[in-house]
Image 1: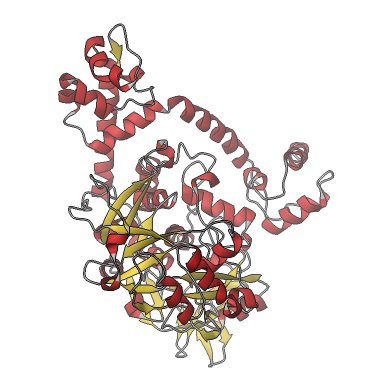
Image 2 (image 1 turned 180 degrees about the horizontal axis):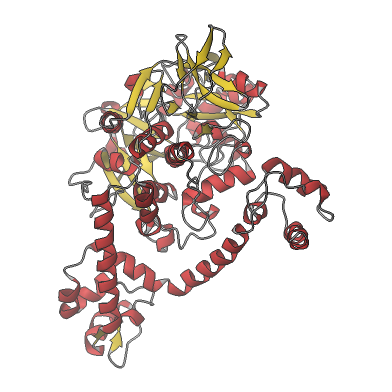
Length: 638
C-alpha cells in the first residue's frame, strides 16, 4: 500500500504495512463471534478487550435463546458460528418454549452456567491460530480519507488494520445508576470507554443514548424455595447445535417462580423520588419488552403482582439471578422490597441491581453488510447498533466478522434475506427502519416465520456456511446425511397406510374422527392432534420402519408435511419479494429528480440509499405508491 501519514494525540506515524487484517474491538457476544468467524476464514485477527477475564461475560441473565432468540442461535450454528456449541456445553437446563403453539413458535432456551460459558468461549477462541488477543482499551480509530486503517489504544499503541469491527456493547460513555449514585462504567466493576463516540460524531455519524438494567443477585442459601413454584427442564432435553460434538443434558437444575405483591409495590414506590428513571438523571431509552420493576409498576398500575423467575448462575455457586426485578433504585429500597417477596423473607443480596446508560449509533448509517456507509472498512455489531440481547449481538457479530473478511478478499458480502433467517430480519429492520429503543427480536417481526423455524435452520443456512468456508467439512457431511434421511422418511410416510382398526382403537377415544379404510400417514398428519410419534406408538410395523431414523429428522419431516400449504404460500410471497431484490439501485440514484415521490420518501431514500428496489420497499415510511413511482421511473430509463 502507499505510505500514509497520520496525526494522533500521541504521535505522528507512517503506515507501511498492516499489523492485522481485522481488529475486533470488544469481546462480548458480538465480538467473540466476529473474531472467531474472521479468523476461521483465514484473516489475521486481533481481539482487543479491556479485561481478558470477562471475555464472553453474561452481563445480564445467565440464559441463552428464548422466543425468536433460540432460532437465531440455531442459525448461527448452521452458518458455522460458535454460540450454540458454547451454550450447549455450559447448559444447566433446557426447555423448548411455546410447545402448546405451532412449530413456527417453538423456541429453544437454556439456563447456563455463566462461568463455564465464558471459560468455554475463551478456550475455543484460543484454539484459533489466526486469532490474537490484547488487553487494552481503544481510544481512537485511525482514519484516512474516509477509510479506517487501525486503532490507537489507551496505552498509546498504534495498531494497523484495513478493517475494524466495533462491538463495544454498553461501554461507550457508559454511566451506571444505583439510586442517586452515579459512576462511569460499562458494567459493574469495569470502566467505561471514552473517545470513540466523540471521534465518530465529528466524522458526521449520528448517535443516541440507550438504557438497560440488571436485577440484584442473591445468595440462594437465604431463599425459601418451598414457598415458590418449581420450573423444571424438559423431560427429554434438546440442544442448540446441530453438531455431533454437542450433547444433550443428562442432569438439569430447576428454576423457580414467585411473584411480587401490592406490599412490594408500595415499598418500591416509596423510593421513586430517588429513582434516576423518574428524576430525569437517566436520559437513555430503555427496552420496552424487558422493563425495570419500577417501570412495570408505573406503566401497569392496575396489576397487583408481577412474575419473577429465580435462575441459578452455575453448577458450583449459590448465587441466583432474580429475573424480572431489574431496578436502579437505592440499594436499601431494593433490599426492603425484595424481602417482602414470598420466599425472599431472609434474602441476602450479593450485588444490587443497577441501570446503565450508553451510546449507540443509528444503524440506518450502515450497509446491510454492517459496514459503515461513511467510513469504509468500519463495521459495527451488537448494542452499538441499538439492539439488546446476547443472541441479537452474536448474530450481528457473526455477519460483521464474515463480511469484514469477505471485503478484504474482494468477495461479495453475506446478506441474509428476510425469508432466509431471523438474522436477516434483524439486520434488515435495523438498516432500513432504524430503532429508537433497544431492539429485541420476536417471531412477530418475521413475515416468513413458518419458514424460519428452529428445526430447519441448518436446512436453510448450512449450504451457505459451507460455501463460505466457515462450516467444517465433517459437520457438512453430517448435514448431507440428514437430508438423505429426511428424503427416506418422507418416501416411507407417503407410501405407508395405517389400518382403520388400528387407528380407531387408539385415537377415537382421544376425540379424533374415525377413518373407514386404510389411510396414508401423510394424510393423517394433516390433523392438528396427530403426530408421527403417536402413530408409531399405535402401529408396531410403522414403528419398525421409522425406528432407525433420528428424532430431529422425523420431526422436521412431520412439520414440513403438516404445514406444506402454508409454506407454499410463504415461499410464493418470498419469490415475489425476491424479484424486487433483483432491481438494483445505484448509490448515486437521483431520488430528488423522480417526479411523484413524496418529500418524506425522497428524504428517507436519500438517507438509506437502498441497494435494491426490495430494500427501498422495506424502508419505514415508503408506501406502495412510492414504489410504483420508482418502478415507472426505472422502466423509462431502461
